[in-house]
Length: 197
Image: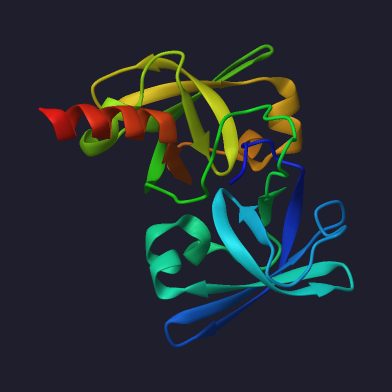
């Protein structure tokens, strides 16, 4: 479990592609401290298991399902990824509860920029629309954000300068892919309502 507060951006050092598997090596500093084999790390919002750690980098195995259902199948050496260590029991939750189980890879439809203002308009697949509500929570590439406007096929989030500076979202352009995870509480509430009706 995570909270969508990115601790640092790591740099992809190597991607080794094998049959039905890719091995991802990411350079990091802060997130590497205290991290050991078997720990869970959110990489661009995807919960991955550390398979090796040390000498300034961590390694992860990406199974076929992960490659097909997240944007990690498209990462290349030199690219940046958002990193967050798993929550500790008793710690603060500064964002919202994030599982690291991506619902869908969606597209940035538009980036609206004005002085001290950046709005990302993200495509909203119909099957996820009941989980996205104004002022609700959403996770994009591992970043906890508040939903702004909601339209029939899209929703908006707004990036403060700190988010733009400390995460990869500041570099997102129209047409870019993002890992989208809807709020787990919205899923439980909607799931419970549908189960009773």
